[in-house]
Length: 143
Image 1: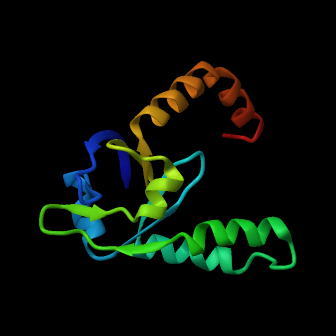
Image 2: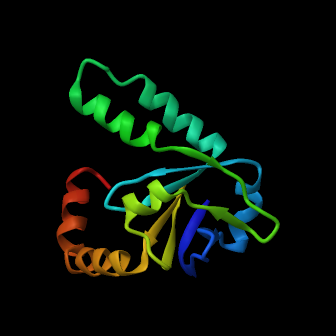
């Protein structure tokens, strides 16, 4: 289970350290892809397979299904964790997520999200302001 919020910096070779407590689980194999809200999603290979299987069953005759599958699947890349616990973030994913130097890695149970620190802080501030409204909507859904 991935939980917590961690701050790191990307080095000049586009390498990003992964929090130590998550390295063993991701060491086997991991996948990074475009996420939502201008972040990247990092999955274990096992969890990624579940997501990719679901995406492959979306009806390709629907434009939104095709668009979302393309966003997630075409944007995905296998990554390996090096001996120092780092992954390399490809240029196209850093560009998509507007990641510069300072990064926040957020644990969201089955995935890690990788955010530009400035974008994360704005997102988090807005979400915290709306937390009562969000909780009320989730209550309507039985959460």
